[in-house]
Amino acid sequence: MTQELIIEAGRTEQQYWKDLWRYRELFYFLAWRDILVRYKQTIIGIAWALIRPFLTMVVFTIVFGKLAKLPSEGVPYPILVFAAMLPWQFFSNALSGCSNSLISNANLIAKVYFPRLIVPASAVIVSFVDFMISGIILLGLMAWYDFLPSWRILTLPFFIIIAFAASMGAGLWLAALNVKYRDFRYIVPFIVQFGLYISPVGFSSTIVPQEWRLVYSLNPMVGVIDGFRWAILGGEARIYLPGFLLSLGLVFGVLTSGVWYFRKVERTFADVI
Image (cartoon, rainbow, N blue to C red; front, side, top):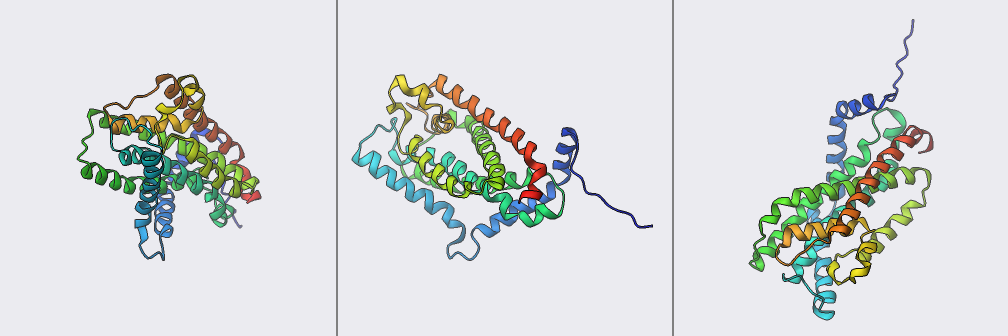
């Protein structure tokens, strides 16, 4: 008598989250594979994780700091910019990686069951590795300008968690939508580029008129970036509390809804992809 082995997704939420732990080795494998592939056959390899944000910081410092002479919250302008470049680069890389993660792993998804949440989550981890590497530039800038952070630097892990939540939430939405609507492969680069200029990366959010600060905070990355600057820069850096709370609520709203929508359409991925 022949026996059939049916591989079936967890029917309950509790079983699904247990499956995430059971398949943790696959999570490690996907993340490590993507880290190796990202800079494979490049001449300078992982140094690209340093060059791109550094050159962006140089351009923003010249345009906004030297030419426009915008305020720098009492710190060297390169440090002001790079304190924002860190979370923005993490977020933008995560969006790009997550949006294509399911498509690039189509063969794996179509053949075997595992919690599909592992795929975009591993893409976020790869972006987080770049984030950690880019932190070397910030340390170098602090040493160059003889800048010492205050006690606020101890709160930085809290803001890193918020950046992680923002990246994961938006990434889950784009990963799921890109499976059904392949137009998102063209939309995501536009979102990333447009978001760079409407987020306070090259300038301080304090230049936004007070009556518009709350509206401006509807961009969740405003709160994330302001939080990073508050923790890293100390001194004159301030957090606009109503705007930060609004951004914080939006971040976790996007994360919660992203997990919900991803789980809702997850069973259809193997058929559509």
